[in-house]
Figure 1 (cartoon, each protein chain N blue to C red):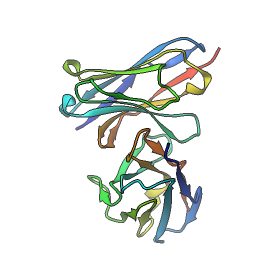
Figure 2 (cartoon, rainbow over the protein chains, first blue to last red; figure 1 turned 135 degrees about the vertical axis):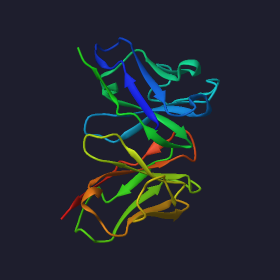
Figure 3 (cartoon, chains in turn orange, brown; figure 1 turned 180 degrees about the vertical axis):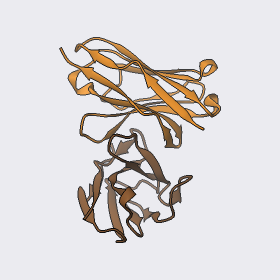
Length: 116
Length: 107
């Protein structure tokens, strides 16, 4: 059974940093692209980042480019999202997702609140 | 960026009714269109990928169609467990973009 479990969320002040983690199990992690998708409170979904199987290619929307960094450790079946220079508009639930072209499996999400 | 417009924003229908949700792209997305279902308090779940392919375990009452810029999700006979918000996603080009969602409730 595919499982994705996010961790690392919490309350952080504007301008500070936070690193999210996602532990994957139930599939061969190194064979799949992985992604982060977020959802602001009572809002829609926003794609945040994608990483290739080896980690050599990464993709971001302009809203987070230069501030967020997606990475992975295939030996640990883990995905990460380093978030720097956080803004209030980054407040959201962050989902880790397996990206078999589509986002075919999702974690339960972790909440990040950016507030002073 | 490709803009995705979903309609209606809110839909109320009766159990057993046929329901149609729409998603329109601002340019041709070559059928790289997915549908996701999100129930209250849960993570989204993939329903349909590449316009008309049912994801594993999804009931056959769900179907998708479309081409070019216009896409449709159809529920052939609405069930109480289908109450959710439905999002479309285009994967034709970066950045990947979601529609704003259609909230579906039972009348």
